[in-house]
Length: 141
Image (cartoon, rainbow, N blue to C red; front, side, top):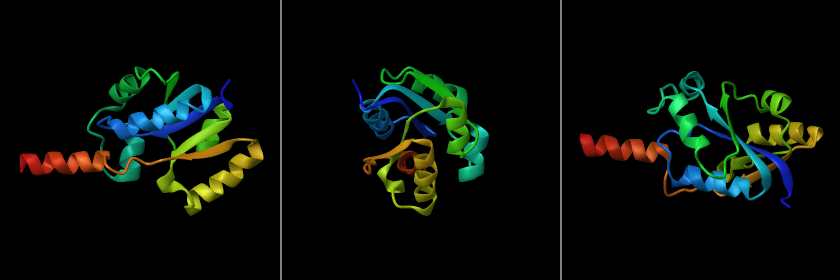
């Protein structure tokens, strides 16, 4: 039996790569059921001021077909408490590059009041979607 019943991980998952896969696999190791929130195109634009390369519906389809993922939901807001209100997960996962930030310190405190654990997982530093975008831009320049 795993430590938690339901886990929640979120991300853009644009240009799906091994860093994304490792986050999902490591998340699933902690929970019986893994729900993944995939940021919709409008949320990505609001957060990053650019559209993702892969449309949200396709990113959701890709993530849904990863064996460690049990359910995929669209994520249209950064408000994780709203997500908890509808999904009732008991643990959420985030890359350790977010650990100790004011935003996640506040979220940890809010989640603690709800009985939700926050687990920070190793960020795969050798690859990111931004790095892939840069490599593609350089190769086509």
